Image (cartoon, rainbow, N blue to C red; front, top):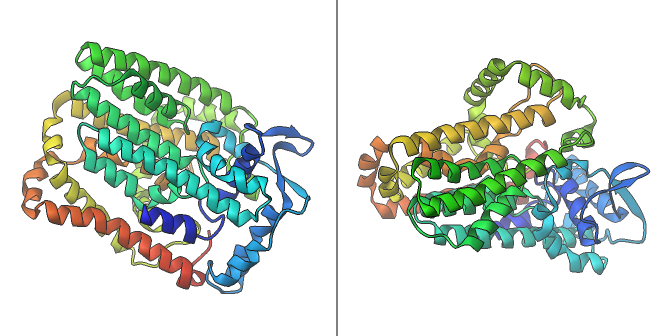
Length: 445
């Protein structure tokens, strides 16, 4: 929670991933509009013009060589109070997710929006609303899981995941929904009788979160296939309904009017989903090779993104440090979740490992169709650091080498816990330093 609060309050305004577009959608929901409306300018939201004008302050500070978050910049932002003027914002990119993903931030923003508060106050309220929902759901997942609790805790506190949770974005609720679904799956796998309301809530939340993460619900179907018990079959039926809802919602929300935030902000992409879908389905071997090749060749960028790219500014740290963070967390989890790792074996482990790989390929496919304008798969991994981070717990569970559990145990639990705690503290601390003092020396983008 302290790290999340640092990010929510000290991360420069509107510099989280696509935050201004998400912010406009949240303000629109706080004003009573669940979905973007058709306006003369297009499909989007109408918000106070002062909120749009306030976003220029951060760019002005950067161009002037000042750190991105100072008392001067805060005072300037507080001066942008709604005055009756409005502006249209293209919020088509936000239609990839249902309104559910925006509700925590919208609930937090209702009062300041109603009072006509400056945009930065609305932003802080929205961030805190998102963070509160994330912390509650993540805590529930960790406390109720029957296994791999430390893996869930590490996934919840990976700096990039924590930054998404502490920003105005549907990503935080999506990550929390994944954690909760995995927790319920561990209980089903452990033979526990999971209450039906908990199953419906967890699967429904993930079904209506950001696609295509609802595919994680396939875990419950695999459990029922591998061992047919009454509890597993019931969970599989509920998860199957969630998969159907997620598929329908994805198709309904991904119509021809959808465009990526990058498109609406820069206008540099030639969006043609029919061409890209035809190319995707017409060259399945080429697509599969492209995903594997991109993951291997660009993985070094993803590692940097998980620990130092918490928004527009990268933390000032040597590129080797994130790799050290990965090693520390991996070894720590082998110690802390080693018993659970040894119990998960055979077909179950293979199925999980292959399932995570399939999910990553599905995310690459979505990225190709909606975030790339080139038929050669260029930029297919443009934001894969962010898109793959929610799968961190499943990736560790399915891919970690079980043979290393024994040697790792020699470190002891205290050292492992220190690693789990220390990594996010150091990583977020480096970002805070960047935001407050050295940010003007880093590249914005």
